[in-house]
Image 1 (spheres, rainbow, N blue to C red):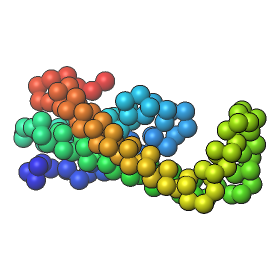
Image 2 (cartoon, rainbow, N blue to C red; image 1 turned 180 degrees about the vertical axis):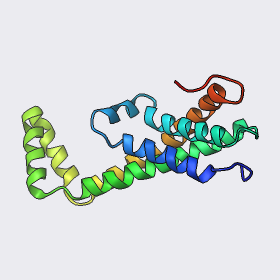
Image 3 (cartoon, one colour; image 1 turned 120 degrees about the horizontal axis):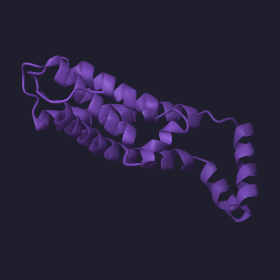
Length: 159
């Protein structure tokens, strides 16, 4: 992979795009559908690699690796900003969240009270983000391979 021009740039652009899009409310729900935005980031990464390396064949392993790295970066961006948002929830907002939970399901109040106290929420957050990282790597790698097959030399250009 060291022979590819603009490898770092393509990973940064693909990962940043995936991470930032994953933070947008409503749109981020598409990550629940096969980590769509992480796959998009991996695909964008490989598309940029193909455009910057027209004279060199970008191999499947290059597409897999760069797409996976883009997925890692996208997940790290998403997790970092999400952590900052979650860890700075004020006590007033937490009380409001508990009121809504109680309205929706009075029996769940005790469970959520335990979750929100102490470090349980932060531990749960890191477990969920660890799982998301695994799926982001897989999705980014798949997005990279799909992008390579769609946009490699002598084939169609993007819409």
